[in-house]
Length: 196
Image (cartoon, rainbow, N blue to C red; front, side, top):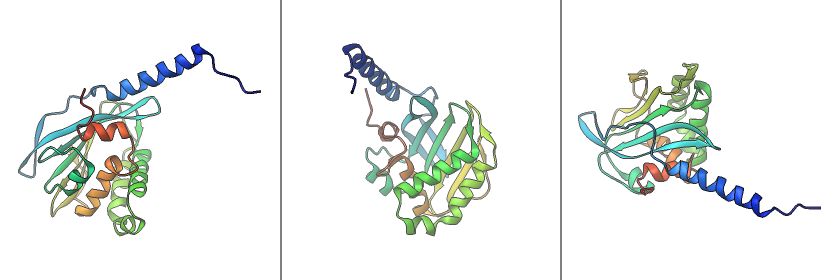
């Protein structure tokens, strides 16, 4: 026989859901700079948010662009350099991080496109797998420069030469703003859609 939830049980579920949504809309604990220089261009913070898995905070993330955009289509069509800046909020095993980024690309890009960029994707995995773990408060970044590719940074230091092309970086962006984003609340925050 199926149990019918009590009023108190329903209230607890609703309160829990409200707290979770409020937490995801809250400002990040990381102070992201409002502007930064990339390849001679001044980029502005388009938006910032926190990546949640279940109820746990994983990382804070900021998106830097040459001008403000408020949709995935605008972001993907926007020319010029871009930067994704992250701060770990919990211990993140490097191998898991690389694997999750690749999964995000596979979930949001056609298979033939993913295969076309297999070498650049392997480099992404190598960069993060080369570090056993990111600790809370540590930073990492992905910076795109047109005609040069994507440079990965850990603790502010570039990890080798740039890889990939414009299309590869679009696949990277789609991890967070594609049709199956890693976190819909984070997507909205990066696009500046969660203003209170």
